[in-house]
Length: 157
Image (cartoon, rainbow, N blue to C red):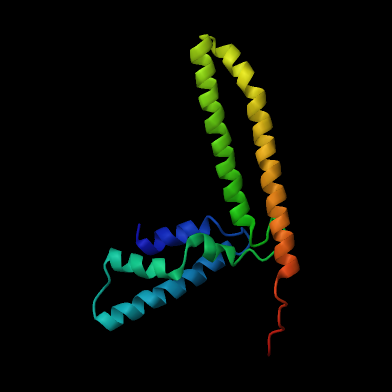
């Protein structure tokens, strides 16, 4: 897979479903224009490493995709991607900690069933707490973003 296609796949996975294909085509066109201009300047096709440099200069996939989340709130606004990633990583952290706790209990007691029974309620409550805290923090961030955002100026025709 070319650096361009790999980059577009990373952006695509972070875009809202509505209009995803059109957005990817628009980005592909903009990036191909940059690549073609550089090839014309240098008089030769670019290597994969050179294409990678141009693609990286376009911006981080998460930042590029975030521009297309135009709704409001956590489930459609510009913080949506960060909210999702924070939820994912906090859930992973909770599961890893509880897996280690389960292993320690199982090794200490030599009873896997008892270790699982003792660990499961804590895991469930830790996941619920992580989701609740993450949601509250991002809801506060989104409210502050909306409250303190600079006013939008009407576009001139």
